[in-house]
Length: 224
Image (cartoon, rainbow, N blue to C red; front, side, top):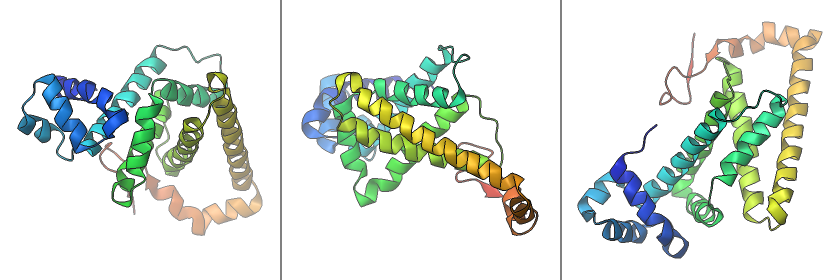
């Protein structure tokens, strides 16, 4: 998705201020002054001030990640390694201090939903870029699981001082390995007699769950 040019100009002007003033109204005011944009116009583009600036920065990172993944040949990698590569690319495109400030902002109770939605959007962008075609309950479980992995990895990365952030990439690999083990257990359950009986009985309700038909139709719907 192409950024609105004025919003992009404001965001660019805001970034140098974030390490000092955080994602805040003060940062938006300073960005408007630096960019020569009327304060009223800046406020109309980012009505919640710093929160909307932080979300715009996160969305820009997702967009850059999608472009990088589209230009990267992942065919030789195992699927779990494709996921790891995507998460690594996403973090390498980010500025750690800007993310740190955003994590502080979205840890506040009244902004937590915005932060969770942003992480979910990143997980969705990764799965979509990697060609996920699931349209049932798996659509949700894949994104929920990757959201948890991504969120935990971000927190680890913020405190990682190892060379080249190698400790973070090792942590990411461990988390993905744990997820893959869970997926194997789920597959084994579905194939054994008890699992088949469960899915044919009480678990049948899960078969009617569908992925959202639009990206703004979250968290999806149930077809009766």
